[in-house]
Image 1 (cartoon, rainbow, N blue to C red):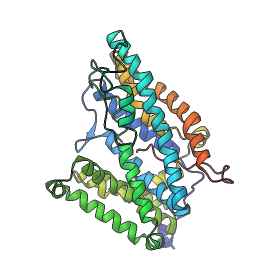
Image 2 (tube, helix red, strand yellow):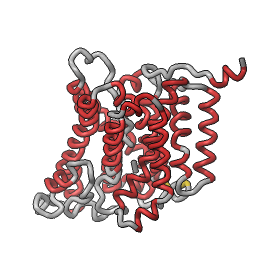
Image 3 (cartoon, one colour):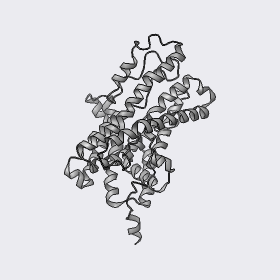
Image 4 (tube, rainbow, N blue to C red):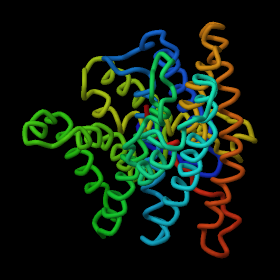
Length: 367
């Protein structure tokens, strides 16, 4: 009886969990981590050379792997892609426009007192939007703005992770077309194992000429695929308190004790532990109904840069962080209500409009 109690889990509460809260906390952790070097106060707390924002991204990716795998197995290939595009692209594109034609002009006026040459000085606002349109961030600067801040030039240093998250969506889209992937966790386990092996041996890939973009994908993919593997395990065995606590302990030990690839090896344990916590920790009802984590993630960096430009960093780090949290949350709420929720409702098949829209970790996934 004791062994059965230890091993038996309960179905994961997909409609009554705290994932919205957890993703918002992860997004806020990214903001906190970025605050130090955006404000010129060093790099902030780190674990094995990775700041807290990087570890928050890992949390985003493991949760995203779990949720996106479920989405792939519950929808057709066309609907799956439509949902993923609708969830990530509209708010992303609006964010690019807001940065290019609201944030950057304000910065130009604050730094130079004029908008002369703003529309024509490379990188121009339109060039910024066009060059980043595909999620692959090719341009970080706009004209001569942000020249006087401690982290000069970069208007949004968080968006780069979205490209790799979408690559993971495509990977799961392909895997989801395999009957064997749907029937057994072995394929997901093998995919995770291969991705971990690639990251451990990434030096060989670099010697073969693969560029930094591949390295970044190799770094993040094990987190996503670790979450995908856990989806199959939770669907078959449910979520269990003892396994959840044990998973968190193992994840912490691997992350703390194994440099460079310990976090990737810990991905399934991190995913299971966070899922268990999200099943037992309550969240406010308004957060349950509104997933503002993605908007919080994509607007935090430009808000932090503009706030530094306005002099808020001189008030001290606690006040600076508090101001950026409030402003970022306001923009995230506007993004959720005005863009994200509407796009997801538009993308859902007729007759499913009463179902809550599927969400992504902001992303994450991201740092």
